[in-house]
Length: 386
Image (cartoon, rainbow, N blue to C red; front, side, top):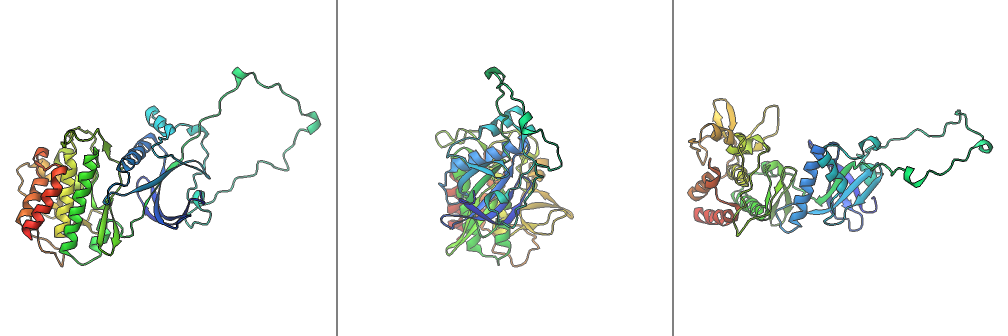
């Protein structure tokens, strides 16, 4: 596939895949290429969810990461572009059967980067032992016996090929994730408000398509740097779920049961193991917006890099908002925060924005504003406080 894309370097690595910086061979356009190894039915299900969600967005919103194409890898050097809208049926079969289709006959090598570009620094080349060994005795050609061709009913179909990986080719974001971008720069109130507007617009768009993200956090928001300021892109749809979409502008109310997400951004109902709806995204968005506006940061245990996120103090320890609200539904959150240790803080949010954030962080999901109303409420609150 080197005639389509070239790989330059690895730019990110997570629990499920690796992201490379690359270029389109014809145009030179910079892209991000994400390799998702199809090693288990559980992983494959997440990858298909991400593929379906990104296809549904169809590059239609500036604040949602755009998918350019998808490639299916069936061998160490064999990649096949998927047609727009096509579904990799072998992967669907793997999820349904609970086992990777063709696993017993799959080649051992999954060298990925060399598949796209032999010269990529991150590729690893494997050499196979020659099947022809000069010391191995051979039957003389004259003594070779002819064998009758098997009857048609005895011929066995070739074993199914195993899908080694999915490659997602996406737009490249040069500003890193939202943590990296904002925390590497001095506080800027106007920039923070722009980020909040864009985040709310993206979530309204996703919910309008019936997509519940279920893992909204600054790590999963990427930034493109432009002359007019940062353009944020909601990304990483591996935990997302799709429903039939809203009816007459109202959310479907579809309920989910899997406890998933990131601790400091999970809603109380998710913490409590209850069935939840797309309104859990509104809570996660509220935590993000609060942290962005006040530049609230924390350190997770064992980590060295600060992250954006709001919390509740329990003595020396920090507790996620969702967990604290699940334990005490009457807990009163203080917005703006009274005690913050981060230096060079931006001006705190005004009364209108603070009231809206409290609504987004309500214990009761039905008390949170739905996404299709949120964008207008955020704009109105920012204008009022201005």
